[in-house]
Length: 127
Image (tube, rainbow, N blue to C red; front, side, top):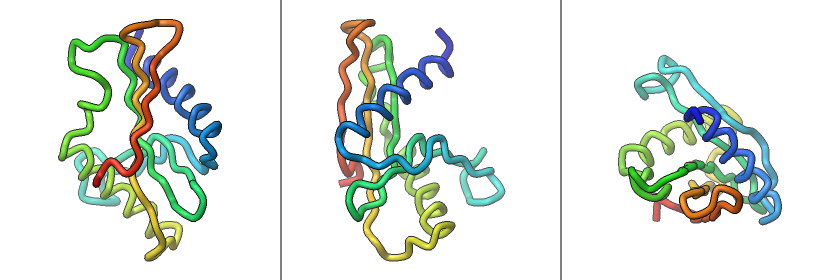
């Protein structure tokens, strides 16, 4: 299975999971080009949502094995820094200003079961 297919399947499951948790999905796969902000190649947020009055930027990582670690290990300092830069661009674009926002993480892990993945939500991954 290609990484794009894997990612899309994981994002679809995360989307449904987040809706059941009460998130209101605003956008999927928000992308900016590299010239718009100082991130090589641009930036992407997998899911942009609202939970109550909070704007939430969600990174989704799907894994079918733990050869490279569980999904949450993909959230390095540099990945979080790039996601926050993209999130701040989005905030400026929509005029969100000083209102509350955060970065959440959803891991979709098929390593133990290909039919019943483990879905893990970590709120406010930056704290």
